[in-house]
Image (cartoon, rainbow, N blue to C red; front, side, top):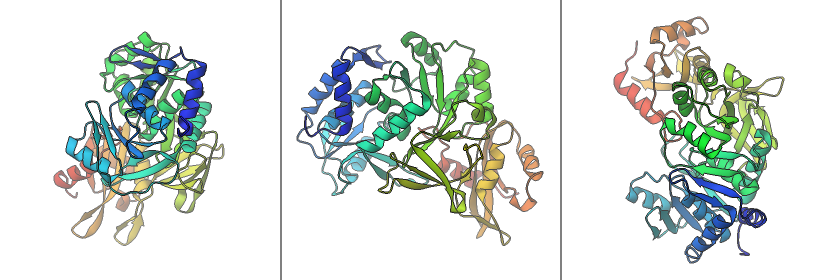
Length: 442
């Protein structure tokens, strides 16, 4: 089809050259799809979307259906936005329409919508949706060139080959899943095994049964797997951790249990992949996140913020400054220092929450930490939530040896497990609400 996107033409060429290659595995049913079969299903589905508008919303879990509908939209030159299939129907429908989608595809229905009048840049093929640090959805328009560049950077930097098989448990509609799962499939035919959900014990069985070799995941899953009885994970050769900070304690426990070092990966919706640690040494020590991906340049700018430049960056200039603070070591490896945020005013003195958060996360026994400015009776108070088995007194003592007393948080929320979002990140809203209702100043 002449009006297809560059993503479609790339995939079409691959499917024609290797029609019999297995490229998709449904882990729920065990059904496999060849490139030729997937191509045919996408074209058949496209025939039902020809009279829809330019943006199609997919509310589908990780499944062959998601990939088929995505390819169908690309064959017609239409943009796609992926929504959480677990949202209530009315809320999902309203969000899709407000974002400009004229069609909502779910596992049960294909529904026409009355979209709001929203303009997206010419050539948009995908809208990434994020909530950032608030609950207000924000979209980032991707052209095919952005996604192709991100996939190319990831495959070349991580050594992901056409012969590999990816285990797709992270949401494929999010930036991480798009870059590490969908793009290797479209770019080079790297097979993708998908499941909408799982219990940890299934992972080793799937790896063995379907000969899976690459596993992009999140720290929360690695923590669970590290606590399970030892299972052989052959032929798995590469475990990638992203979406949230990977505590060295978790990396070491996973390595000790399964004899595979998880490799730290850092990226964002606005930029795609940024940095990667191919050796795993930074993952085990927590000292750094590795070097920039091939095709990516990093610079530390005013306020120690990280600036990313590359063809995958979603801005006209190909450059974006992140809210994260960091430093580049002499060997070129990136070390994060926390998120840039407004400083707290403690007794007339300024302190950055990111400084304390970074120190907490570097403490042995701490899996993850969050520090922010809390308003209490009209004054700034530092609050900290820490995921650890240590006691609050232990944490205060550890900070006391490195910080002035006025820099130590006054509100604490110390738990062995903190609430997380569906992406595996700390749920800031729930944590802050909890500390506000249950904690008091010391």
